[in-house]
Length: 211
Ligand code: GRF
Image (cartoon, rainbow, N blue to C red; front, side, top):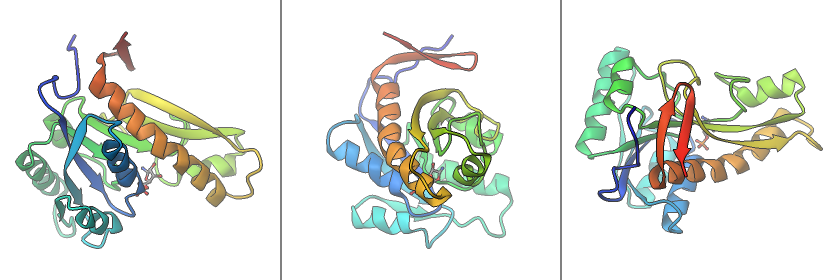
């Protein structure tokens, strides 16, 4: 059983953030780092879209940000380019923050148990796209968000934290999305700092922390 602790305790963990859109979770991670709540530094922000607003936000914060467009590229080649860019930036951890691409096994194998994702539902309910709309349409009374390690399935990796939200008083899926997003911005930094600061192991489907 491999024991884990962030970057091995040697130095501040270096993060690579992958995003495809607005980048609010990236900004939440950045803000938490600035407040001293996460022992990490953002080494690089990568996107498959040149126009992703999250890239512009990263640049305005002085963080290295690169677009590696995927159009016209086979998934394996694009993933190899992403992995090369992450390795060039000497990244220890990869944080998916609204990155709308499925990772190849080769990508996942390059960072074993070091890729995190945030998903806007209480997994295993409502995996995949438009989780908030799925939850709203289903009529559940509680939803929320999940931070999990990434494995080869779609939103199936071992869960690190889940933050619930109540549906009470909500009138639409859009309102639910906003309520979940507030919790995402708390959950992602908390999950990352847990993994960086504690000893932990993956046992079956579980992330087990040694207290
Ligand atoms: C979030 O809802 C996240 O849970 C999902 O994609 C969305 C990204 O939003 N994976 P943002 O770009 O971080 O604002």
